[in-house]
Length: 235
Image (tube, rainbow, N blue to C red; front, side, top):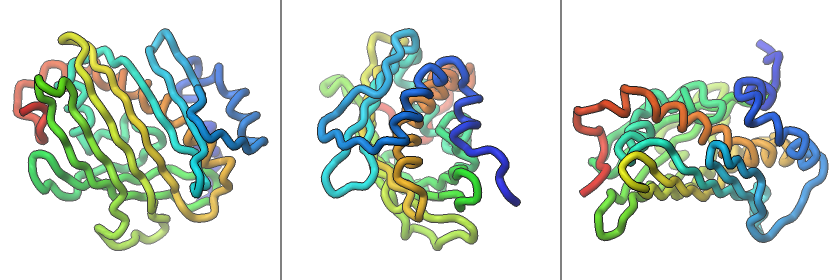
């Protein structure tokens, strides 16, 4: 069935307000391919404490991204949102399906994610391998390393497999009720999607995902959880 509304427009409508103010700049950037070799500021939201950057690296057709956010939630709550893989689809950019594939240990797992794609372009899916460095008082932070594992399971009918989805996320508690999140990464969805469309997503997705994360962290399911987390948070 033909998709009637491009996924980028649905995303803008769903977060109208905080996202819409930058839409004009993003659309202009879609028309003119820039070539920034250093990080440049894409979006700065002082109300929500979110900043995003992008840069064009040599040998890559898609821009890399970087995001910093001050989350109104404890390290425990923020980690639990990330570990609740089945509900990643509730806050991560255009995710229509998410599920845990394998728990290797308390610090390693694989999960599956399916993304909406624009118009008649096939939806994308990815398998992501996560390695965790738990928080320690000496370090003062927790690290998640994410890397695409496209060969972990066979290709799925009607979906194009994401071949590159690499990210490092650093979580630093700021007092007891706030967490600084710093992430840097690169995602190439493969296939024949025009580069300007992908770059638009790369510029917008980090911000929209952080807005969704801020919302999820406020839910009592995470803030009031007393059961052990499914994966390690601290040593």
